[in-house]
Length: 204
View (cartoon, rainbow, N blue to C red):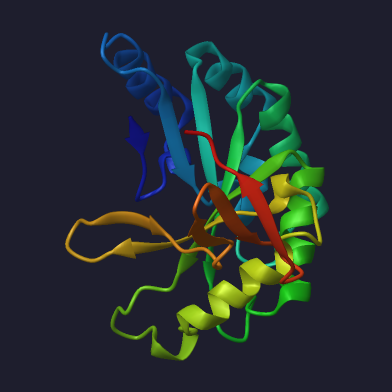
C-alpha cells in the first residue's frame, strides 16, 4: 500500500494516524509505504511525536524524493536519522535532471551522502517527457553513463536502479549497461565496469 501525492506528511498527526490505523487493520495489506518530500523541504515536521506515532504501524517504509546533495542539510539529515531510529527503512527516489545532477561527481556526492544518513538510494528516474520539462531532460545515454560512473567506484549500496517509468502504465523498466555479453557454449561472457571481460562457467 502506497500513500502518496499530495504529500501524506502534510496531514496532521491525528489525521495521518487515523488513516494508518485503518490501513493497518486490512488483512491483505502487507506493508505501508509513504512517498514524501517533507523530510527534505520541511524537516521540522519530523518531530519526536510524529516518529513515535509512525513506529506503531510497522512494517512501515518511506520513500523520500531527493534531487541534489545540497538538500542534505543538517536539519534534513537529523529528520532522516530520527525516522531511521524509529525503525522506518528509508529509500530515495531521484529524477535525473540536466544541469542539476547529471554529472557523476554530483550524483556520487548525493548517493554517498544519503547512505551516511541511512537513506538507501533506490530509484534514479529518467525524466518523463511531460509538458514543460524539455529543458530538464537528458538522453538515456547520459543515464547509462551515469550508472557506469557509479558502478565499481562506490559501494553497491549507493547504486540506484536507473529506470524509465514506461508510458501507458508499463511500469518501471530498469536500464543497465551491457554487463552481460552473452553465452558461449557453457560459458557466460561478462564485462565489468572497467570494460574487462570475464568468463564464468554456467551450470547445466
